[in-house]
Length: 164
Image (tube, rainbow, N blue to C red; front, side, top):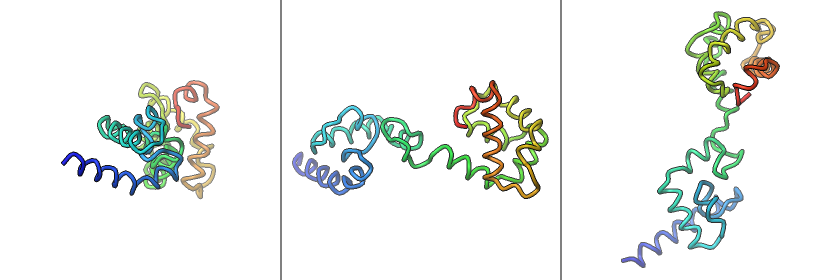
């Protein structure tokens, strides 16, 4: 019975190994197991995959770009910001003019702003509204670029908002 389980695990590892190798990882993929066990022999990679599974950190690594998962994670912060802005653009525009709101708080969080800076973020968007929305035809992408540029020039927010 133990041999059968080992053979099944070995077979499944080999089936999915090409995905890991294509990304530059071993068969176990990224995650703490892949970081800890660098040896790319099949039994080592099975151990790394088991370790990733037990710790449950591989998904977090892929979404955050940590644990050796690099910039090719499934959800990059910038992509998430762009999707959020595109899906909530009209509400964000209104809330920026007002200086507060649920969507604005979420955007501040997506930009990595600390919770104690959310109010300053709202005040910033309100006071810099004309430079963030340069025309009535400003696209969500243009707005996000202008916002990030403005935030990077504001010392307090530039140091607080880690994902601009």
